[in-house]
Length: 88
Ligand SMILES: [Zn+2]
Image (cartoon, rainbow, N blue to C red):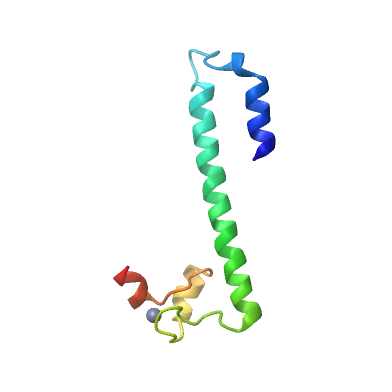
């Protein structure tokens, strides 16, 4: 992320150079959004792996009942059962 930011700061005159395509700033916004989404997924994955390590993976954090296998298959990083997630 620091690399992306420093690259942008060293080339501010590149913005809006192509009138036919998307502006560079809109591309940066889009890429920043993708990066944030990837970081969020990475954080969820790390948390799921930590739950595997401590033996609590597949157990709902709220009601402490097992999370349905189908839910974990669809969303392996799920930390709540369907019932508790739907109450949020
Ligand atoms: Zn639950």
